[in-house]
Length: 598
Ligand code: CMP
Ligand code: MG
Ligand code: ZN
Image 1 (tube, rainbow, N blue to C red):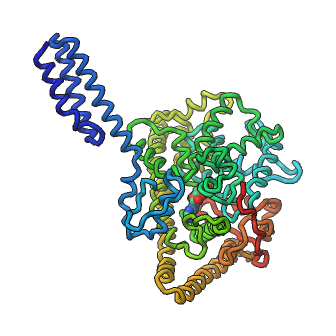
Image 2 (image 1 turned 180 degrees about the horizontal axis):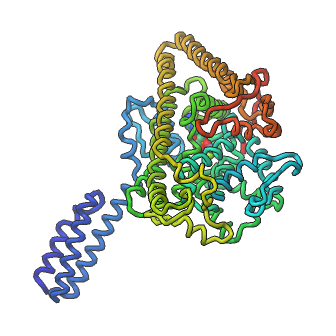
Image 3 (image 1 turned 90 degrees about the vertical axis):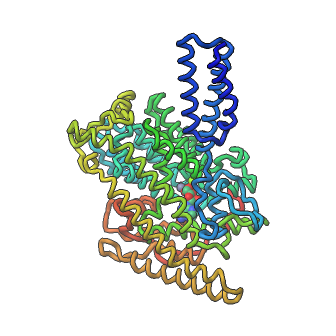
């Protein structure tokens, strides 16, 4: 038995404890390398017996395992990400909400006062554009639909099926008359996904099938949302919670129910896909929609950050999931008017859940008590800890994926950078596209230069987003001052101050109304009174009463539904509303809904 070999074994034994979980990965790797090199040398010299060799290899394996466990643990540990949240910088209620909503901890566990809050718990763009645009240009009959011949040839989705499917989606999104999770939110997220794909240039990395998957996933991502949270479903043991075993209850339902629609022949928009394409699209859609479950937020961010640090290419499904997730929480990156309206609509939805919780004798979920919720504070927390990091990661990811494509394309001087080529990340957009003859190359052949890689400006995309997010945060900070005041005064004063906050919100409402009643085209139309509804806390954004149409000078938009109008009324460049609609007098109280909606 070689003396050196025994030495190695001893050394391994004496130091192994240090390399258990929690050791420094870097040191462990060095150690492992040393051990293996030593073994190789001994083998070369024939200076080792089989028993020692076996022992040493087993030891090396255990060190390797410890490194693996340590790395995995770090990857799974979201605590680091959150530990910088100072306990007094974020109000308790907001921290409770962040912890219970954006991590996998189920339910809201009541904290003992001395306990510190824990946050662990916490078809190519053109064709995609056509898809969306045509989807919305529906008329009651097929008359008037004028498709260019090349679209008819390449468009794999039977138009009548698309119309039936889109109509069924609208019905499903309107089922619970939610102020926030309604057909306008679906249209908004779909349009935002489309915007991100074009303006980051990521569409040049994706195949047509993947672009279709993105648009489709966005369109169905909140289908038949009940206006209540996953936690509410779990607490009330709703049918869907039982069906999906408390796991991503709503998200499972959204995607499953949307696919169920397509079981009907006349709604099957995917009828012409090959078996392989159908399966691939389904797998992508399921992954994307499930990743909109906010309880996976921190894990998703952490995993993607980790991926960006590696030299390998970025996983497509992960990148696509991040785009959808970002679009889903994108209203803080849009103009204050839009962001404020969406926030208040969401708050109203939360408050209605709070009303139900009170009626059922349940504890209020965070942000669901209309009497005590700190709206402005919650928004600062939401922007700081959720929105900003998500968009920062999104732009970093897009940069890692798209920059090599841009470099490659500019070197080869492909027409308008329109010819996809292999990039250093191993992204083979063209090759991937060619794998599926039914979904040919993503190239636009340079005919649509406005969406080409050459026009992509990721820096301005990022700067613009961050500027808007910051500006919105500042607005909330102003409103938070008043909110804080209300919180700190005595009961009687509290009431008075609340009136003052109401007055401030009312003032904000009036200001926004005044601003938005002036259409960008100079025409005056009554504002869509989301803010008013929220101040009066009774009318949902998607209520039937909202279906009044704004007088619109564009005859093409006459037949559009609310969602279509909202989407088209939003300037995709800056998210600013171009038009507004819905008169104040149509703001009316809604009927009391069933306490638990399934
Ligand atoms: P959903 O659209 O299903 O997925 C994203 C979630 O983010 C959304 O539901 C809300 O629960 C949450 N969300 C979006 N905007 C805000 C906001 N302004 N404040 C708090 N939560 C938000
Ligand atoms: Mg959702
Ligand atoms: Zn959503």
